[in-house]
Image (tube, rainbow, N blue to C red):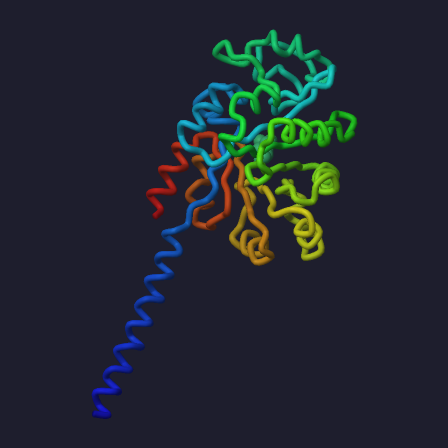
Length: 271
Ligand code: G3P
Ligand code: CA
């Protein structure tokens, strides 16, 4: 009788052990980062055009990432650079061009530069937006209230919007305008190098995560940040294929991908 009870206990312990191993394996295989279409599917279609956003949605990206600039007449347009030189057939600073002038430009494949309002009109609350605010060239905050007003006007649910910026002032201003916003503080190399507990606490007080260039990410940094219950979203500098494997090993929470189909495939293969 005692032997059978001991045997039973040993079996039960073994079973518990197996299930925990399975659970650990299951957790890792469950890993799936947010796939954020960086400027849309910008490796496949001209960045920040409806072609690249449509392609990103076709590839089932979780978010479309939008960089914002403000024109001379106060319109918010989707544009990464401060000039239209690299991505259109035009020349000049966005903030010195009227919307009419910007809309006359070819942003690639005959596409025009979309305004933030046109993007919201086209996709409404069908998609998730990951929007980057920027200070103007004088370092002034110029777009936070206007952007929130637009999101409200088109009734985009807050849970479908992440707002990000390299500008700490912009993130602080957005939090002040609406503490319920989901915010991500983008960090530059020197921010990361001197990142300490005080910095992380300041970020955590108002934001749910940080954005860091994949090329400077180390496992220790990822652990330091994730241990503070902050999400970490990695972005690339045109070198996605160089860093993807390593970034997936770190199990970052989100990845800005120029090619969401490529990333989804890599994630699937990792599972
Ligand atoms: O927002 C993440 C990433 O897009 C930041 O860099 O220069 O591509 O806007 P950038
Ligand atoms: Ca960006």
